[in-house]
Image 1 (cartoon, chains in turn green, purple):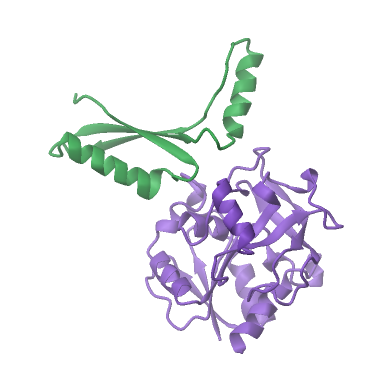
Image 2: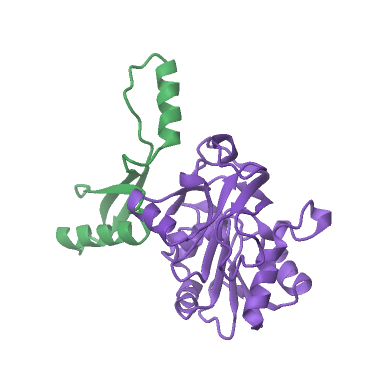
Length: 83
Length: 230
């Protein structure tokens, strides 16, 4: 199998109170943080027989149809090197 | 006249709605399981509140992809009345039956309280028994109720009269402290362009009897009964 990672995070124009709260907490720890966006990471195993192109297409479909809400979220697909 | 209450795993307002629809306003009401694929002969379809699928991923996201939703979409397109309350509203936006999205409350807390709202549009099948501008009081109970749309879509909602309820104070002023969750433009409830699909975060079914602290929600259902029977 091959591993696909999908990152989903709120769009810049959408207020992200979770990220803002984490930012404040990090600053309280003395870290010089400029901004934090809190998102989700999905690790998905796919069959090895799929080509790189097919994997990207399927990942894109998963994002558009379920994993991300395009109105409020952006996503990024990362194909991990085979073990 | 028949009403369907769609039940998802994690719905918890389904029995309240059944009681109001069946026993208080007298509609012939049935539960429909989310794995069913047909909604035949229902004049009204209700998506109840609750925590479908534990609010996993995004609230309403997984329920919006369940088998019954094709039938709900089909019924909406045919002009049947569809109402989504709280989690039901979240499901309707996730399914694309209503524009926008419901994000975590601005203060990141679950809010359970009573709110005032102004009736902005009383020419829908859900609201014609209210007066335009009337101030009503309903309970809310949600963690993800911050309504969001982009500016273009917001202008469309305003222009088409699709904003049905706005949060306000008891006098009807939309002032910041009355917006419980940080919703854009104080939006508490919207309808689709055709006016037959309504979504709202407050719970009208929880305020239909005096013993529950208020009756301001009842007219949503009596409005529907009158429209459906004529």
